[in-house]
Length: 241
Length: 272
Image (tube, rainbow over all chains, first blue to last red; front, side, top):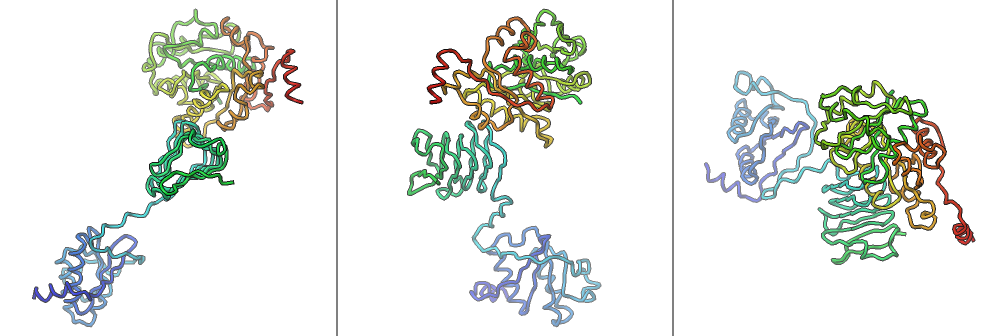
């Protein structure tokens, strides 16, 4: 019995499982006929991703077992439990089918909102959770001695950045005011980060480990609206107006 | 409705103590009940500037630590009934102050006075942060020079983050008091212009006090300049600033250079 399952598991044409999520992040599995193949695919997927279900609650959608006889739902549930899934509910099955069995404790037909769950690809780490705030807005002056560090994305300052203040951003930096302190962009994006300011009076600007102090740019740019970017491995400052 | 007002600057020697005494006296002259509290424990000066150095028995540290009652430490000015001083200790250091103790003293002062003026020590350490901690209003004393302006900017940042009001989500009122302003040097472009300072600090202007020998004379005599020579330009500037603090609308006039022969020649040439 084990051998045919093994070979099935490695077959390239395995059916893709239908796995759907709920807003409370329970996973819904819907076993389909032929059950042996479905379980084999499940085993293969669980082997590929060490932690396919994790601690998450699982809801079993048993609609496919409706015409598989009275024992079918019970066999499927046993099979799921044997694989360590944390069953919390079933749906798509007549409650009477489970009455009197140990599965009668499971919740029936829980209400929930469907949401897409990307099936985790084997060998790839879980994608990082999306950042809650990809940009940071500061609508007051950044004072001397203050340090704004935002590694997740862009920083926008509405107001001046004082001498002795610093702004560090994972992405780009936008300053609607005079930049008199330091600004360092691209902590995360590297050379793609840029700095924009309405008036350049900065002490230092930097992008992706390249930096320049005010003595490196001439009087021509001082006090003007400027953008700072990486250009073929060098830092380039150019007037915007 | 009492107001706690911190007079602060970050940098030393810009005129915090002089301004605390002068604003305190000016408010008291306008009929307000005022106490000026010296927070510069270890380097007290306010008692000298207010001419009370020989009357200090108990001080702020004694009150904070519970060794003396507040009325024992308060010194009432001999010239102005409504003006009092709470001196600092000269023999202790700033570690003798605790936030909880200061909070208690400020609460007690609030019951007795309309204005509690906290004369902050220089720096950004404990003494300065405690002086600003309970403030409702801040007067940032700045000289028109880059180092003073940058330090003031730093202090404004701290006023916006380290005070009780800021932590409670309220914004504390901040005013800029520009002192030691030299009109002649400003006219020659040797000093930062008022507009430049205002542009950098971005807080409303409370007043401009011109550099004047009257200020030094008054300090040496132990008398706030508004009391010593009320008609002098610095005294008028402080008196007007006090009126603005009380909510009056008074236009700020930038002091202009006194016109000697040379400056007349100079001014004409500049105008031509």
